[in-house]
Figure 1 (cartoon, rainbow, N blue to C red):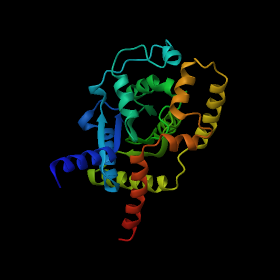
Figure 2: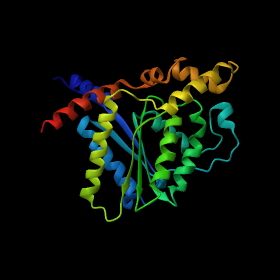
Figure 3: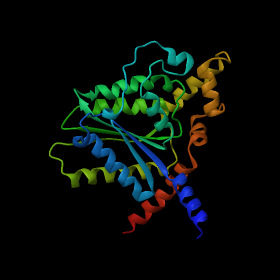
Figure 4: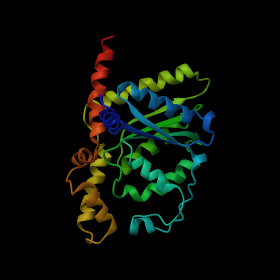
Length: 266
């Protein structure tokens, strides 16, 4: 293979790889179970097709509190100047987005809540339709149910197909056991993705509600313009998801189940 052909082949492989970004909700960094869970999840995904994994840590980002000015709803852009646009851009450029967070007093961490508050305006247009969502709750003992329910709903309103939502109980958890739990959850994800049902009942209802709302808005309304640009007026959420899903992700989902079936033979 000539040098230019080899370079082209490498570039095509990079383009076709599924992109995974993990949003970590803990400031403990290297000592964080939330970070380790996300890393193990990304590594396990690679068994079913090569992925590009990126970790976003709170210590490396400046995310300020929402001030409630509501400018994001009127013009589609936050009035604050910090790293939130970087986070949104990385999420939008990815195929799979992982929220991995600790439990603080039966809920997610304050940092993660701050980040979600800053994403809220994008829920009106289900901005991340066509992307797979994963929720990992990390806790010593309790409080996981509330956090799981909240983050799963958040992802669904934002448009993610949240096909994996689970808790890692970290009390006396060895690295081997930790990796085994994550590996099992990735297997479940591959199986869930194969059935082709990417929208939840909540998303079916919310999409219809928002679509009807958009029809009744003036043409110059910012959210209506963004909605039309995103989904080309698709009448059903399932059609919108398939319209927005990347070819790389579609191919990965198909190939991953082939590998899953082969694994079951041994």
